[in-house]
Length: 85
Image 1 (cartoon, rainbow, N blue to C red):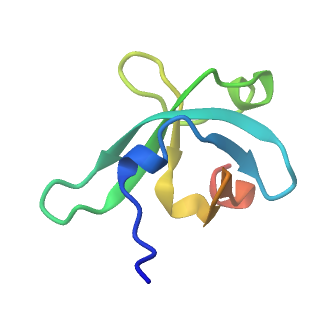
Image 2 (spheres, rainbow, N blue to C red):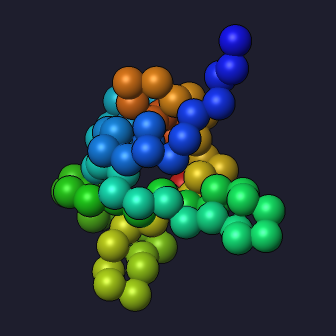
Image 3 (cartoon, one colour):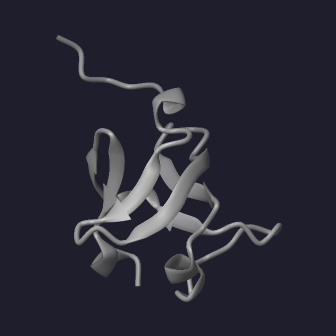
């Protein structure tokens, strides 16, 4: 059985920490063109909690979460908050 998922499966998913803090929803992904490595998730509807953190942002001011902080994918995208802040 193939466990691979396309990026379309991530768009719209809610991003939460391991402790259940909500960051927002995935609106887009950035990746390295040569290798295909996913670099960051761009969020839409960032929560007040997320806005209070000093996270990296796009030129348009959208919040970015490093994809390296992802610990689980399912109904939600679960991130390790300690890897972000």
